[in-house]
Length: 512
Image (cartoon, rainbow, N blue to C red; front, side):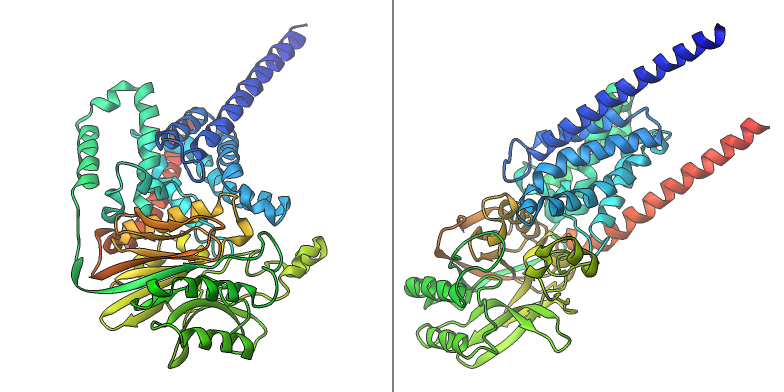
């Protein structure tokens, strides 16, 4: 009888525990969604991001590693599910796969949360481990997918000054650290009364509002004019853009329509895939471009796809002028399942959509650049703008950045707005203007603070221009990038090792 009562009591306790965990799971799922509302395309007030993070963290505290892991999974699904919904244009399976890849790193981080709670400031310790795993998400697997890291939101907040002073990686840490420490302080109010906490708050405010220019030098005495053209596409989604050379024709027509604006420019910028047939190999495309070049003064920097001898493709930035053409950049960070198929044989057996990408792209190896006299342009293509390191490390002497992109596949689904925010962050981090040229939107000219000067919305056709001075040198975010990149990884490893050593020491004491 006693055994039966003990069984029933244990069963009820476990059932109660399961219900409490299920409740936390649901709250974390909802909190992840709340956090996602602060990101484009919704752009609800930015504090929702911090509130969502804090609630997920609160749900995971006090649990064992496996349960904490599940809370991290719930938060990730709630966050990435709606943010990456644009991927379902490729297929629901592709959307779920990308959400699963991003969620995997959140789960690993939250699995270490119980160990981090043994430190005096558990929120700070967990934020460090968290940031290290976010760095790994930007690298692995298949080159990584660092989309929608928390730090990218800086240009939407009053703390945009953190971007050139710190950069995206430490801002991601700050978002997590502030949110988690607020939860810790609510549970242990003595934390907010420590001198170190007060000093941390004052330091944060100072870094946000006192510019740390590093070695940055600006010269507005000699400027160059740039025109960004958005020509449009025939239709959106998967498959072709329309008839052969139709995208090229659209951009030629849009450039001709802006002839007055174009003729006193130093460079015209077209988007990724503006030449939908390789003009270096296709005679008709070359003739179309040469005819336009004969009518306008400046050269054109455009995107094209070029076949390679090994049967792969290169996504390139190409300069076309009256003197001829020259390749300026080959995209280095190519998109898994978008520009190359991991496990191609398996994917081909799983879905006939693999036939839409019969050949893989191969990556370039050097950074892109274009010299216009004393003005130096850095070049990135599409997905590369989400990488937190390329613009910070590529070229100290780039006076501005060009982002070629083609968002037609994901038109009106949120991807364009999210990519634009990443471009704004690159501008703010480097304190340099960024010129975004998209086939079908959003094209934009972004100033050195990460704010939008002018733009062409999705599905519209037109041209926008800017006259820019030269910029050389590094912001403090650029100077400190290697320290943050490797520092967080080292600090996270040190914290994990320290918790292991503490656990072994405590176990030996208990056994004695």
